[in-house]
Every structure is written in structure tokens, then in C-alpha cells.
Image (cartoon, rainbow over all chains, first blue to last red; front, side):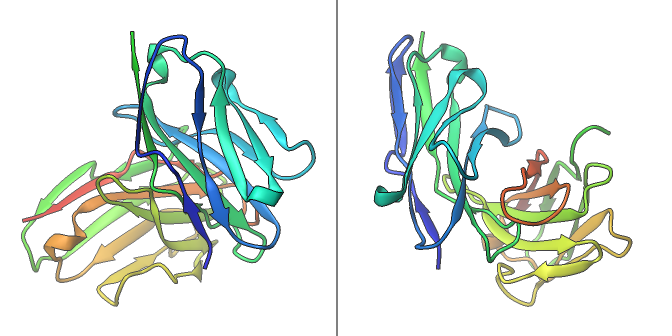
Length: 114
Length: 115
């Protein structure tokens, strides 16, 4: 069965620090990859997604992620975080034989200190 | 409304009781999904509908859980004989259609507490 692993449970950064959140998935076939964000008290929102083509995907709010097929990874990055980026981040995978069903990782809580 | 709407937002029930959670998807979205999220975990897939039919119910944990979408719009998740382990946030989501790569839009969830 497909699974998604997020390496960091809780990350604490100061403002202006660079961010990289790890995500690895287990599935040998074609995948679509997503990062969702959940701000405190809000619903899950899509940050960015990868379907095909350029493995470097840019999303909202200055986030980007790189799909490295050989490493089964889809790490999320941001060059300079802000206090407003404090949230929980979820990586998710969807495969072609499962319709629209998403499999989520366990999430990474990001705390940005002002 | 503009987004996925879920009611109730909070529900406290006694162990053994029956609970219904309602989801109103984004207008025109044919696919509807139910997920469950426990504290400190990512959303766990339960079931999804394409139109009125359940296309994949492989995530329902046992036969106490059931979901319907009789007219292809609003869906109800039904939990019988609730147990304390059912306490979680139940998330509903919808997308314009099923199929890989579609963006799924989530509601704010229904917080269920079984005491």
C-alpha cells in the first residue's frame, strides 16, 4: 500500500530562516504529489501540486517543492519564512489507480518565532 | 456557499450513541470525500463518492461507519454505537471530478468527542 512519510514532526525557526520540510512516499508507479497547509483554526488549503513536467513546482506564498523521482521525495522549501507561516504542513500522494483519493503524511508542525 | 460546509462543527456524544455528520460540498463538484484526523496525525481516508455512488469505501474502519450521498450533493457520515476511539475531526472534501491530480477542497471539519 502507498504511504507517505514526513521526517520532521515539529520544526522551530526564526523569521527569515530558510525552510525545508522532507516528504518521502512509497509507490513505484506514476504519482501526483501535493502539499497542504493548515493554519491555526482554519481548514486544509492547497499550497502546491505536482502532476508532470518540470519537477520544480512553485506554489502560493513563496513556497516551492522539488520532485526527485529517484529518491521518491517531494520536499517543500521556502527561502525566508515569516511568522505567518506558522502552521501544520501535510504532504500527500495520489496515484493513477486510486481516483482522487489522497494519502497523507502525518504532518509537520512549523513554528516561526518573530 | 463558496466552500465545503460541514455541520455540526462540534459534537459531544456518549459512548454507544448514534451520530450523523453532514457535508455540503462546493456546488457542482461531483466528487466528495470523507477523511478522519486524529490528534497529531494526518488525515486518514475513509470513503469517496463519485456522484451518488461510493467509488471507494476501503477506508471505513468497520461496519459501524456508513456514508450516503443520495442525490449526488450533500453527504452524511453515520456512526453507530460510537466508541471513545471514534473521537477525531471528521473532514469532508470535494473536487470537480475524480481522477488523479484534481485539487481537493476541504471543509473545516466536524470535531467529534465521544465520552
